[in-house]
Image (cartoon, rainbow, N blue to C red; front, side, top):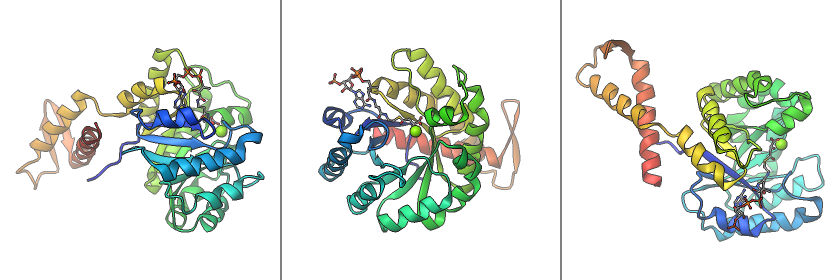
Length: 283
Ligand SMILES: CC(C)(COP(=O)(O)OP(=O)(O)OC[C@H]1O[C@@H](n2cnc3c(N)ncnc32)[C@H](O)[C@@H]1OP(=O)(O)O)[C@@H](O)C(=O)NCCC(=O)NCCSC(=O)C[C@H](O)C(=O)O
Ligand SMILES: [Mg+2]
């Protein structure tokens, strides 16, 4: 089993040359160059050019490089897709995806190149999750990404520290992603200085089943990597479990340390070990 870690996906404005340069050396798994909300209208075209130039220049090592484009209902959306199609970027992140047609149209504009990632950050998008996820094989959709700021704006809710008003949506996005074999990334936390709050929200996302978290500042990378990577105890337990099944190919359920363990747990243990291996290789 080969896994690609996506514990930490750092957004940065493509208009910020210093941040782009810095991202080439940061310990995040994914770098997302933003052309949408982090870029002012007057800088949109220059930011697009800078993003394409950064993708072509490379230097991001093992980090997966993604560009978030402007929506197809804006004056920049179509130009963004046209510029990125043959740029060599790994994936294009579409904002505010509300239906499967948006994915089909983006795929037609992009050609065969990059994978598609979709932000789920509108009421339409949440209600259409089933059709959006089902369009994955035909459109190359590979990941669903929560957008908590836009969701809170549309819902007019106050998420607060525990994000309780968003729980139904977090659960549905993980569910839709798992059903379609997609990556699920949790949304950003706007807090910059309170590392305990950042770490707590990263752990919460991990507990909900997300593969990683989108981030907005380098200080958020270490808490995300910690929360979404397997702990030493989880790795040790996975090794014990995998070893226990050796030579017991005919057994469905066995006892380990006073607990029942089944083959479905073996599958989870193998996943834990594969992720640990991929992270170790990266480090
Ligand atoms: C939020 C910020 C504007 C804060 O900027 P600033 O106060 O200038 O940061 P620092 O002085 O603490 O920066 C310290 C050094 O780190 C570099 N830096 C900062 N942020 C980044 C970054 N994201 N990537 C790479 N490097 C970064 C600075 O250059 C400093 O370096 P040095 O010069 O060596 O000292 C800023 O962090 C920022 O712009 N963050 C990203 C904002 C963004 O991309 N937003 C869009 C995505 S989130 C979103 O849209 C939400 C979603 O759609 C939803 O609906 O929820
Ligand atoms: Mg948003």
